[in-house]
Length: 220
Picture 1 (cartoon, rainbow, N blue to C red):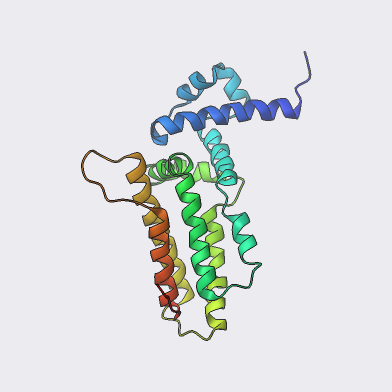
Picture 2: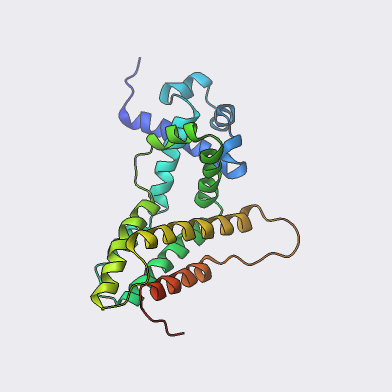
């Protein structure tokens, strides 16, 4: 029997994750079954279970890969190396978020939204999927950036209207709201008049509100 190399194993796992990803683009993630993935790969059930214990393990690897592709961490880290004003860095942070979201509304963002439905309806299952994810999420990194934003405001002697904890909660809930609104508009819109969902406009408005909450000023 020929020796199975690590590269061979990784290629097979990538093939399976690719199949799950493609199925999730066509139907809600909570409705995807292991049979869908098997059919998409063309492999046997036994071949799938040779590499994964089940659908949720596949989903965990799929999310890990999506987080790598939907990366705001690299541009964020490049951004903070520059000596921008508090207002400038706040606008630029949320421009990065807007550009990334707009680029992935119909793929990564759509699947993340669907996985959120699993988190609501099947929290135990969602926890299992999350436990297998190997990479940090953008929202985790964004939360860590809050102290830097506050520090930049304090450095300028601004009169902050909220606490760091209140700001973190405000950013998190606002981000989630923008994300859901844009995904629903892009992926699940009905016939008839629709409100335009432009991530750039929405995140710019959020940036303005944060600047004002932290005592800064906006000129536009």
